[in-house]
Image 1 (cartoon, helix red, strand yellow):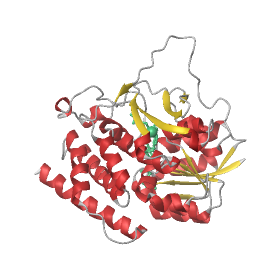
Image 2 (image 1 turned 60 degrees about the vertical axis):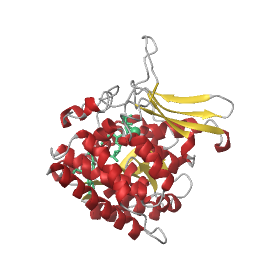
Image 3 (image 1 turned 90 degrees about the vertical axis):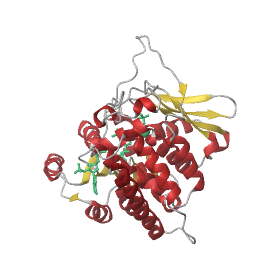
Image 4 (image 1 turned 90 degrees about the horizontal axis):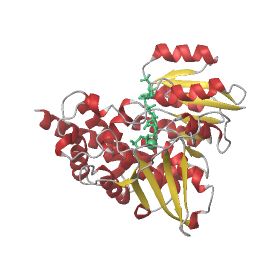
Length: 363
Ligand SMILES: NC(=O)C1=CN([C@@H]2O[C@H](COP(=O)(O)OP(=O)(O)OC[C@H]3O[C@@H](n4cnc5c(N)ncnc54)[C@H](OP(=O)(O)O)[C@@H]3O)[C@@H](O)[C@H]2O)C=CC1
Ligand SMILES: CC(=O)[C@@H](O)[C@H](O)COP(=O)(O)O
Ligand SMILES: [Mn+2]
């Protein structure tokens, strides 16, 4: 029996985690829940799972992690606001099932240095796939990580053909049903950019050995290529309950948590290179990832501001990544040691710089 705290319990990841736990009551017990603003659903969940410790908002979520003992904390908060909870979980020594990729990308080395070996278990589908494939070999045998991307709803389009797309069109993900921010990031390919940085930080593989390949069916969730030419891929229908269950009890597999691929039917799995001209977000992410320091945090903060502005109708779709590029260029790296305070200051500066550009575009 594993005791579990779920942060972001009212969201896509959180509610699917509760589905897994509801179906496996002998394996898991929920001992804490946290959400952002949805008090009604949080209360309903706490009642349904008999949970006393329920928190609303970032500060309360961090206090919950510190005060309530658990075997594993699932961080399913969206955005870099999840950083405090990630740090608090690692400081306490609790296993972190990490869906909130932004906290790893923003915190970078500050997060990885705080984590004991194996303390962070990836929940993001690609990184869960990589972790599963990496169980087949040792680090020195790895030649490349191959991160798959669905390509999003605008796969195959030119920049010009994306100029006037609407928020509703950007939210029509071809294969996954997810929260608003990550779905928008899939459409711009910023999600894949964040995931390349996430893969580098989790698996300590250099950026020139992490590739992105477009796989529209979202059945192969990522692959590891080994030095002998062998490639190990993890494949399953697109269903986050599988990586969530592995995150909650790594490396144990829970029977029946997801349906397998139906091999009695004909399938066509396709793989194609990413069009970096139409979707420059991945190349830009590699650039900021290589630069390290504050730069990944600036990339993410600018994107968060731009995504909100796009959904508010203040800027167009192409302006999202253009704003990230302009903000990365505008916010300089400070001198001196990289501390949490320095990172948070850079994030704030990036949000202001992005907001100024958004205001200029909107005006
Ligand atoms: N959804 C998916 O399939 C996948 C998601 N991820 C990652 O998982 C994370 C969550 O994504 P997703 O579930 O889709 O997002 P959602 O928008 O569906 O849910 C976000 C959750 O975070 C909570 N939240 C927001 N702000 C705060 C805060 N300040 N303090 C505490 N809780 C807060 C929300 O609460 P409330 O509802 O009350 O506002 C909600 O429970 C993201 O980092 C995403 O990139 C990764 C892979 C797949
Ligand atoms: C399910 C999951 O892990 C998402 O992060 C997913 O990767 C989004 O799909 P694409 O970004 O590949 O479109
Ligand atoms: Mn993913």
